[in-house]
Image 1 (cartoon, rainbow, N blue to C red):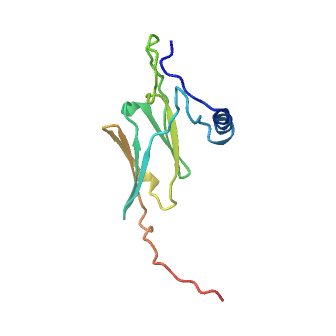
Image 2: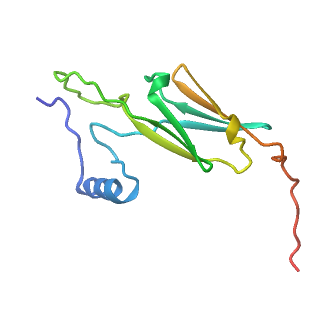
Image 3: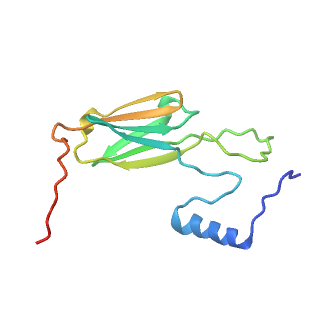
Length: 142
């Protein structure tokens, strides 16, 4: 027995199929929404910080890889559901995601460190010494 019924117009179905298949790979809405965690990107004078909101995981669940200034954070965790549960609406689950970030060329990739506390994965990426910002320069058109 369904207590609530999702209203969907014909255009919703078309948009949902187009976005799901051709654009971003995620449906607009459904009962098992696949989402990416929210991210804060912070630039300090000497480093960059990436904060990823990812509650419900353990440190051992995360896989962090660096490949030629491409930093990828992923989690693969099986969704353990009670088979007797019938969700009316399900807005969160603790399963898998993958986020990638292109690091600046002056990132000191040898000294990246990560911590996970209170549901926030924090990655600290120090800048190299030559990352001093240059002053703004005006260029005249000749």
